[in-house]
Length: 400
Image 1 (cartoon, one colour):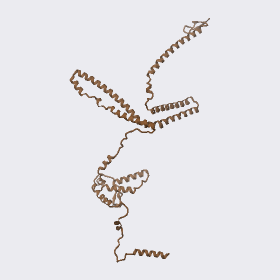
Image 2: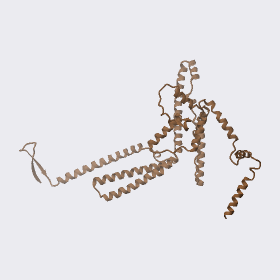
Image 3: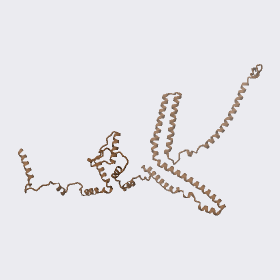
Image 4: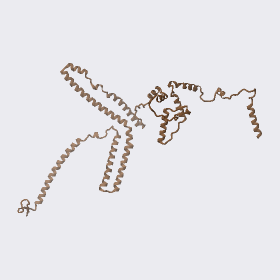
């Protein structure tokens, strides 16, 4: 046993605190503290386990149902595959970013980090190819079926919502009618006669369900047959009617053509507004027999502007195009209006009907092509050609 003294700073310099040190005091204090800490640890561990159990149960109850997370039995496997590939792509991308950050922060081996980054990049490229070259074309092919299924589900939800709303309205209406009947029977009778159920005139989805189910059954049978013989049979879809311009063309044909000559005459001679005129003589064509119209001048101006802008020379008008344009101008009507344009056409039509379709000339046409021979003295023209030919042959024989 040992007596030890200590000065107390709070009691003053003369006061001392004497402690009695025993040999077994340290071991006793240590054992006591260990026992107390063990009891506290045991108590806290049990409480922690209880709290963890209760928290786990509450968290398990808050988790969504597994049936909602797992893919449906009759679902589209392509969409599930797309989600899995996209998730793997995001994981690989996050791993690559983490590898780059670690290599910069910790200064790890650059070769090993580069090799790991290359492997992850190859995996990213593989997932990207699967998404763009594999999933995307297949998804575009089944887009019609997916839209059809989604539309059917939305229609079913909308029909159920309308049904619930109609039921609530009918219940509220029945309560209102009952209160009015208690207050006044006559007014309630009139209200019941005038009341119209809004849901009675809504479209009936059941009428469309039969046709939809029939088409789906036909498509299912077609798919089953395709699986058996391995021949792809596309779903039967009613082809939409392509837009046509037939009505507009009929309307344009029925509308009489306006005389461009009269329009130019009215705009040039009868109008008092100032207007730009071409140079004198620049509109004269065909040796002074014709003049260029406003349309021809606009076409030439457009052609010149295009050539000057693009620094190219457009090809000249071919003979076929020129003949077509001439025929169109002939049919366009002249100064007298549309009533006079058929005079020349009728004459051309008579000539076309009497003209032969090619081949050899007739005897009448051959006779018209003979040279005119005047009558001379009797016997002057007989044998002249033969004598000329005979003399030519004799000269050739004498030369030999």
